Length: 281
Ligand code: AMP
Image (cartoon, rainbow, N blue to C red; front, top):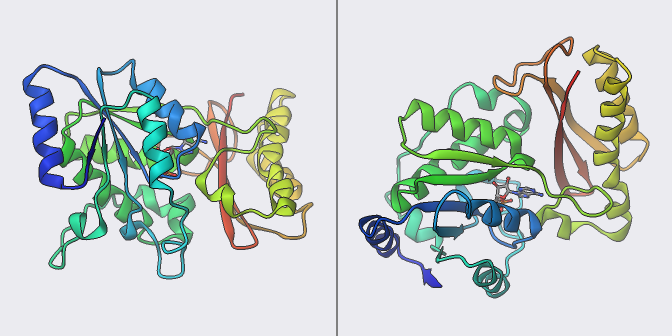
């Protein structure tokens, strides 16, 4: 497995793969890998014969009061996991490599970020689309994998690829959960044992909503109210948003007539957690 820090070397490596007729699948990550990331790598195998993983904690997608400095990192462990998964190369650029002193170009999807996470994290999606578009230019992948855990991110990337005519297939991968239902996330490492228990309310509130819908409930307001109530049964839980929306446009809906996205973000202590599910009437 190649470990490459330089953008130029990574680009040359990928061009060689292409010349030899290989199909490249990119799995972009911020590292501190868990089974969610590994499922992206596993799914990548059916879309190409060379898997490239990037491990880069992208400063451009963190706000000034967010956790860029404390974001969990463990490169040695990440490299071992990638090796075990049969990854061909891991791209591990430093911040200076992707954002040199005179960097001044950004890629921005304009409307989709005006929903959900984009509202409380201004600039977040601009940071994501900028770095993902750089990774796409460097690795020229045939396909790229993104988790449905970050559903809005997946929709934003799909929009960017369509708008910019990037010849890359974007593949969404279902959320991987802990046995008790908590969606896996590198940020779960921040949770105290008490918070870890309370974090279960996120997936439980989604399960309750699914049950409501299976019993025939179609009214968005009722579903959202019940979801919020479940979350707020823990006094330490702060809700950022609970939204029932169209899975393509992310526009809020009032009644569920076709599959809808129930997405939520909540804060426990200093840890912001997100989760979502599709509600099918
Ligand atoms: P991150 O390292 O958190 O930026 O995530 C890198 C990629 O892994 C993103 O496409 C995420 O959506 C995906 N991912 C993170 N957690 C999960 C999970 N629990 N299940 C599926 N995909 C995930």
